[in-house]
Length: 144
Image (tube, rainbow, N blue to C red; front, top):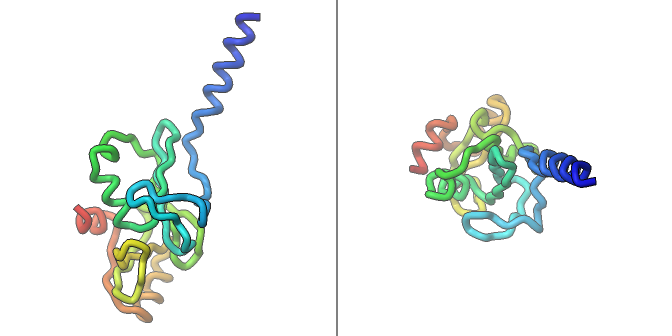
């Protein structure tokens, strides 16, 4: 009986440590950094740690501020995800996404940066809204 209980606890622990992303709940989730509720499905980000802890953000600058904070630096990230502006609510790998900074985009925390999972889509928006293309490395450097 005691060994069965131990096996149940081990199995529960293993399945309870899910380090996978989850969809952002717009209208419910709150930004970990600025504490604002996420309302616009065009904007958002999510970090999942190796241990399965999920951090939600409403804007690129909140995401970047967290990664540069002491709390963020003490985490091991498994996933860094960003909402694709052209596909609301769809999360894509933030490190592989393409970013456009333009005053034409009114983002929740005034970063004026939107993300796209596809470079051709970014080019279309850039021709319509102007702005500057940023790769992940440039984005990280800009927010340091």
